[in-house]
Structure formats: structure tokens, C-alpha cells
Length: 632
Image (tube, rainbow, N blue to C red; front, side):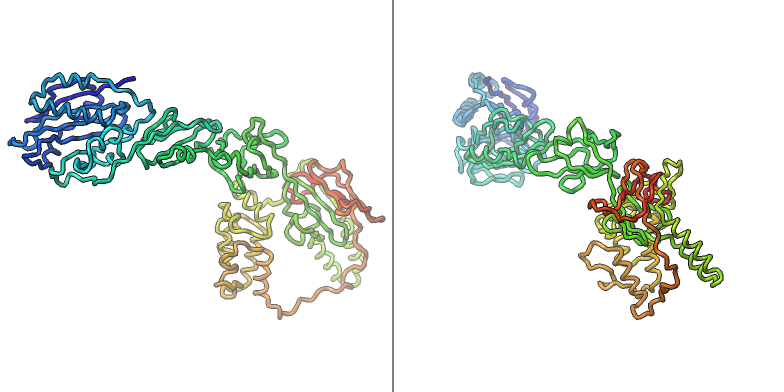
């Protein structure tokens, strides 16, 4: 491909009109300016016969080089004849050839005939080769029409050859309306700014890099990504940005500065596969289901132990990254990037909760496994001494109402003592047997936690967190709308706020806290850190310690310890025999109940009695209606 120069000659005298044109194209010709106003701001001496040289940059269209000839003795300031020469951006014209065109135009000016001259045909008829680059340096420069000033280069500081040709592409020129090349004798006003004697920066050619790791290179030009398939030109020191792109992967940006060494540039823009490559993942494309095959819509993706809630996110392919899938009532599952994006999907297993129980009057421990979190005793007729926990042994006592009946029978008098003991003992023995009633098989509806039936997922999560943890963390509480701010209320003993919050949550632990706080006056709160329970950096509260601290404040240790009934006040008969083991076939699906001794494969006591679980979880078993079984 070859290029030709375009010529337009204009006369500015009571107007601006074309008097000659050659190779004119509207694409660049519409950018020709009326130079009467800027020329009016220049002061030429009568002895200065050299024309003003003006340059305007058009970006990808190249640039305009104008020679402005004025009538120095004329009465109208600014009247002139201007010869405009258009140079295409990809035109490979040297500085020597550019100076030759300028000298030829000066020869025309000497004749005084700008309307026609064979020299025009010579200039416009010559062909120039193409630079063969993707991005010529001059195409990255555009004169700013909104700029307030014109730039000035002094020809006394440089020769034309030093300023033209490839060296004409200087990034600093882009901040001016245009650039004037003037002799030292020419003065100018406030609308002009001299650039100084700093040497023009050399233009460098950067070769296109090869594909790397399946990524193709792009170069950013005017905020657009252009495929980097051929060499490009930039002035020395220019800032450039290379982007590497691959389908379904995050684009890799590599900013660089142009230097004299090509190898330095190529080294800077090289992809570091161990750090730079990230796979693009669309949340909507992730398939998660339970082990039963049912799809799970509400799941969370965690990357390196942090939640990722964006619809489109990126996962490193060569660096370690822990990917975890979480869903309510299911076990967390760590997966690989391949599994995360696989069409086969991810299967989650139902959560299994394991609890250990010790019954009042029995040395045997029982283990219960279930798919639902327990909040109450799973054995009918027994209640937990404390909150149900997976960490410790849960001690179950005979319901207090029956104990009251027993003590009431003792108080009737000696005449009824025998009858009372007889009745109480029989009730005690009968109700001490393990009874598990499967609500689902019996067609009943679970009654546990009937006062708290949150329909909102956030509230259910908050309630579950409070129930399953004895130590509450501030960050965990603030994850839920229902408990956000609760940590600060506890830390500052805001009993009314805690009470109002629990009116919705209906949580037993919060109820105990409110009950404890209401027993002491506001000015006697146990906080020792500026009136707060915790130090500034302590972000967790153990609920048992918290309640004990309040209780100790309300009831000093010097108070008299209440009397405890003597042993001779209760029956001296032996405790009820241990329940018999339930038949494996009688347990409900998904639950396993066994004594702890069975785990260690030790034989049960020789005379231990066994109870049979015939219907799964009881009505008040604390399993929210889900089936469970006790293994002995």
C-alpha cells in the first residue's frame, strides 16, 4: 500500500476560501482551521520573511502541515494565504522528505501565484510507502480543540529535520490546539505557550508478542482494546497497556513503559501463569443437589474461607484456593475448580448431629445421631439440665413436675407415707423407661419450639446459631439481621433492648440473660471495662460465664446457702433400671442411638435392662419432627 499527500490552498481576506486543491478528502479537509485569529496574536518583524509553520494532529487520520504566508505590510491583521498539506498517519515520510515539501511550497510563494503551479502536481503526485505497523505513533495524538493555548517550538533551538518526520509524534503536543514552529524573532501573546528546548523524544517500534497460555494480546488505544497482531509505534517513555484475553477467563492487564530496549518491554508484559490466570465462574451455571438428587437453590460459595456473593466471580487456576459449598442442613463440601464448573454438579450430604446423654440415676451414656439439631431432650419425661450441646455430655433429669408430686405425697403425713412412696416409686420406675415415639409414623405434628416458628430464613439461621453455640462471636451475630447489634447490647447490659429482641427470637438463652439482668439494679452491672462486660478488643462472649457474672453480682457469696433436702427425705430405693436397647429395625431412618460404651466395643453391664425404641423420636424429642434413633 502506498500513500499520497493532499493539498488545499486557502486565501483569508474578508473571508476564507479555497483557491487550489489536490487529492482532497472530506475526512481530513473538514479539520482545516481559520488561522486568522491565532495569526493575529503573533508579532512578526518586517525583516522576517519566513512563513509560520503550523501543525494540527488528527489521530488515526494523520496530521495537517500548514505554511502561513502573511502580508506583513498589509492593513488587515491576520490576512494570509495558507497552504495545507495532509500527511496520512501510516505514510512513511522521512524528516528530509518533509523538509523538501516545505521548500517546494516556499518556491511557489516566491512567484506570488498560489492558484496554480506545476510544483503542486509534483508534491501531490509523489507516492510514499506504508509503515506496515498496526499503530503509527502519530495516530495516538489528537490536538485538543477545547485547549486554551497553542504550543510553540522555536526554530532557533532546533532544525526542521529534528522536529519533523517520525519525531513529529510527541505526546506532549496533544494538550494544545495546535503547534506553531516559529523563528526566535516572532513574538506572541497569552494564547501561546513555549515548550522549551527539551529535545523531542525518539519514536520506538514495539513488536507484537506471541500468544501465551492460550491468551491473545490486545493493546489499549483510546480506551478500546485492539488486537495486537502487528508492530506499534510509541514515543520513548510513553505509558502503554497490554491486555491478554481468553474466553471464559479474566482479562490480564499488563501496564508498561516504552524504553529503548525491546526485550525489557516484552519481559514486563509476559504472563505469570502461577499468579495471573483466573477462571471466570457464573453462579447461575453452578449445579448443587442433595444426595437424594433434589436440587439445592440456596447455597453459598466460599473462597479461601470468605463468602463470594457476586453473580460472576473469578477463581485462580494455578494458585491454591479453597472452594467450599455451603447450604443449610447440609454438610460443607470442599470442591476443586473442575468440580465447581462441571456439568455433573455437586452433591451435598445431609448434616449429622451427634449428642451424648446421661440419664439421672444411671451410669450409662447414650449417643444419638440425627439429621436435625436438638434443642430439647429427645426422651419423653426427661428434661436437660443445661442447653443441648454436641461438645459435652448432656445430663437429663426426671421432669420436675413429677418430683413436686413426689414431695407433695411425702408431706401428706405419716399416714399416707406408705401409699405415697408406693405410688411415687411406680411412677418413677415407669417413666424412667426410654420411650421414643416417632411423630411422623404416629401421624402427629411436632410440638417442640412451637412458640418460635420463624418463616424468614435469616431469622431461622440466627436462632440456630444462638441455640447451637455457647460462645457468641460479634462477627457471627452481625451476619444475621435478627441478631445484628446484639453483641453490643450484651456488652453494655442493654436489658430492655435484649428483651425486645427476644420477643421475636423467643430464645431460651436470651430469656435467661434477661431474667438475670432484671435481678440487679442498673448501677450495679458487673462490667469492669468502662461499664462494659468485655475489653475493647474482645469480640466474643461465653453465655454461661456471662450469666454467672451477673448472678454473682446479684447474689454475693456471703449470702446463706439454701438448705438442701436430706437423703432420708426421699425414697431410699435403687434408681430405675437402665432402659433396654431398642431393636435396630424399630428406629426411624436417619437416626442412630447407642450407649457410649458400645463405641468402645465394651460389653454392657450384665444385669442392665434394655428398652426398645419402637417409633423413633418422641413427641418432645427436640428433633423438630425429624426421625432419630438411640444406639446402645
